[in-house]
Structures are given as C-alpha cells and as structure tokens.
Amino acid sequence: MAERDERDLLLYLRDLRWLDVDRGAGAGEFLADNLPEASDGSKAPLDALAVQASSCRRCRLAANRRKVVFGVGNPHARLMFVGEGPGAEEDAQGVPFVGRAGQLLTAMIRAMRLRREDVYIANIVKCRPPGNRDPESDEAAACLPYLRHQIELVDPAVIVLLGRVAARFLLGTTAPMHSYRGVWTSWEGRDVLPTFHPAYLLRNPAAKAQAWTDLQQLRAFWGPE
Ligand code: SF4
Image (cartoon, rainbow, N blue to C red; front, side, top):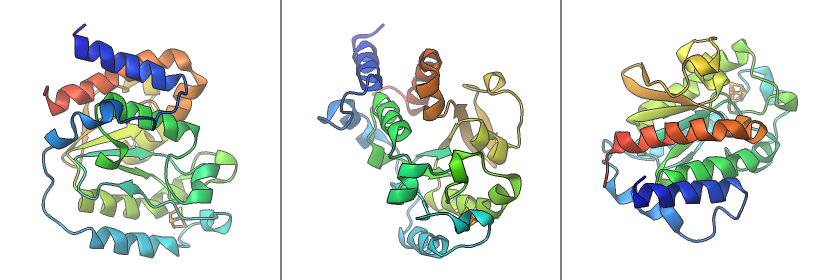
C-alpha cells in the first residue's frame, strides 16, 4: 500500500472509532482544489428551491416534521451524496447527516481527501419519517421533484447513493444491496455509485472494509494528485 493510501486508511479507521472527526484539517484539505469546476451557475435557484420546500406539504411527512431538511454543501459540487431521509438530529437542526451517521459520512468524505463543504448532501425525502421508518413510495414520489431539481442545479459529475432506500427510489431497484453496492451505474447520464448508508455501517462494522473499497473507487474516479 502506498504511503499516502496507508495514511488515509489510518485516518479513516481513526475517525470510525469516533474520535473528533472535525479536529484538525487532516486529510480533508488535499484534494479539494483539484476538483473540476462545475458549470457556472448561481446559488440563488437552489436557495429558492429550499425556500419552496420549507413550507411544503405535498405528503404526509409534513405533519410531524420539525424542520424541512433540504440539503447542504457546495452548490457547484462535483460529488453529491444522496441518503434516504432525515433522522431526529437532522429534523431538529434542519441539516442532513449531522447525527452519528453524519459524523461517519464526514469521516468517509475526509477519507476521500475532501471536506464536507466540498460536496453536496441531500436525501430522497426532506422530512423525517416517523420513527425513522423507510419513506413510503408515495412520499418519495412526492418529494423526488425536489431532489431532481437539486441534481439539475448542482450538476454533479458523480452521485453516491447511500443505502438501499436511495437506490430503490432513484434507480428503481429492490435487489439486495450486496448485488449492486460498489458497482458503477448511471442515472440520467450521470455516474452513480451505490454504497452503504453510514447508519448501516454503524450497525454492521464488518461492512466498513467494503465501504473503504467504494471510497477508493471514488478517489480513483477523481484521479491521483
Ligand atoms: S417529505 Fe418532501 S414532499 Fe413530503 S412534505 Fe416534506 S418536502 Fe414536501
């Protein structure tokens, strides 16, 4: 293993042990400047879409939400993560992936030598399903236009689908996750890589090794420095 890969693996493993993932600049600084620029555009349409979503009542999830969790990150990101929906912490803060799973996602992003603010993070549904259940099909269908607009506006080169629910509603697959995880596919002309949801990795630590291979694929996609 190359020295740099070894160092990144150590950072990844260190972060997975729940040390403070935000302490120090660490690996996050390395690759950000090498990301290709996205198409020129304004953040304003994304903000306008967020405002529109903030009062949305298109599905029953509006009834119990505290905050609409629209999305966060670089409006011109070349890498976009899509999860399934907000949990309790996200519902309280209005920001995706800020709980324990979010800490792990941040560690995964850093393992790719990126910073969280370099990427864009969103979910299939913007409001928390009660009890953290999976979104129902009609809820996902009601909310997907927001995600489609987000993807159009951010215009990422790569979308990483976090977990089976994101894959189900974006790719339309109900196959077992092990059959497509880590396998590049496409969605409407964009490269897509499905991988485990960080919450799954918290429950199944043995899968972290496979997640690491997926992160390495993403790093290889961007190219060596
Ligand atoms: S989950 Fe989506 S469609 Fe449903 S109320 Fe929230 S923002 Fe609207």
